Amino acid sequence: MLVSAKDMLQKAYEGKYAVGQFNINNLEWTKAILLTAQENNSPVILGVSEGAAKYMCGYETIVGMVNGMMKELNITVPVALHLDHGSYQGALDAMAAGFSSIMFDGSHYAIEENIAKTTEMVKLTSEKGLSLEAEVGSIGGEEDGVVGKGEVADPAECKQIADLGVTMLAAGIGNIHGKYPENWAGLAFDALEAINASTGNTPLVLHGGTGIPEEMIKKAISLGVAKINVNTECQLAFQEATRKYIEAGKDLEGKGFDPRKLLNPGFEAIKATVKEKMELFGSINKA
Ligand code: G3H
Ligand code: ZN
Image (cartoon, rainbow, N blue to C red):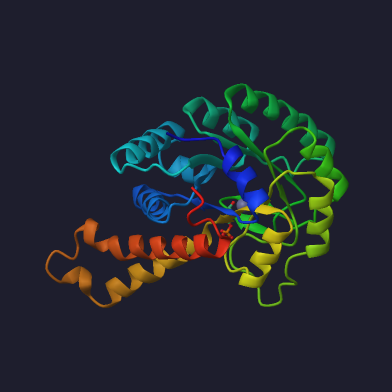
């Protein structure tokens, strides 16, 4: 059964580890992430961007696929199905379809409007027992059409949003979606410390989890980050493994063209990436 992310994130915040949000794109992605979570006794969050939802034929298809898969694979670890960077309408649609967790990303609005819309979202999600993530400041780069300027969040604004009763807060701290550039300045730890101090016990979310050095991940967790989002890294791992398979001509040998064989190296590569992240985040055996 899908669960809200609230309990798993409070436990992570208190226990100084982080739960991974891994974005899904299709059946193989979903199966790889769920099996890895189960094999490692780790809680997990399946992230779905609005673009990926459209690709997978909509929220209802995703809810059906995830629920069916959890039942048939006997997944017993806590799993939240989370809308990633949701718009107001996307949040309503995902909630109606049965998502157990919602991100309403109001970071591109002026803070007053972000507060007003997030307030409505707190009401709607809490009525249904769902968890809610909000965003202040912005994440640099682009993910599925969501473009951010990379503004570092203001701790006072973070407090205003946290005080509304959101489950978790994504704050821009110099993090970027996609690959980090060579000249990246690193995470803004002074800002993170101030945000953690101003937001009470609200678990913080680190977006752009692809390619952040290990020491920075560990420091971020020590300063209140309890959820880390990873998307691009699974895509790169899938691409590299699939490329090797094809370049080695394996798709031309025997039944190597069968999609169940062709997609398998990429599937295994996603599993390995997810396991590596769960080890780094400290969520193994925390289910
Ligand atoms: O919302 C999803 C993420 O923030 C993932 O970022 O693609 O850089 O890993 P990433
Ligand atoms: Zn993100």
